[in-house]
Amino acid sequence: MRRNRPVQVESLYLEVRPVLEQARTSAYRAVNASMVQAYWHGRLVVQHEQKGKARAQYGESVISSLAARLTRDFSERGFGRMKANG
Image (cartoon, rainbow, N blue to C red; front, side):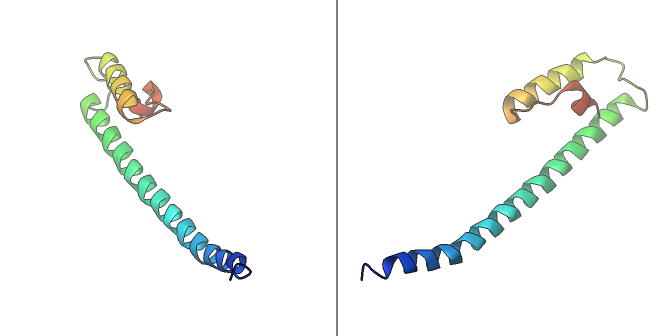
């Protein structure tokens, strides 16, 4: 029985690996799609607040504060001024 075990493990590995790779790929795609939607929505909010101007009337402090809070809550890479400002 021990002699067959490496073959069984290899066979099982070859069966399971592609399933896990496909699951990972599907998860990446779902996360990417969700993040694109979130960023798009955020950009629309900023554009609405700016009303076509380079900056909203209340200035950059709102964008900076929002970026800091979002970074703290959601991201290691951060939501810098350029990202948040579109």
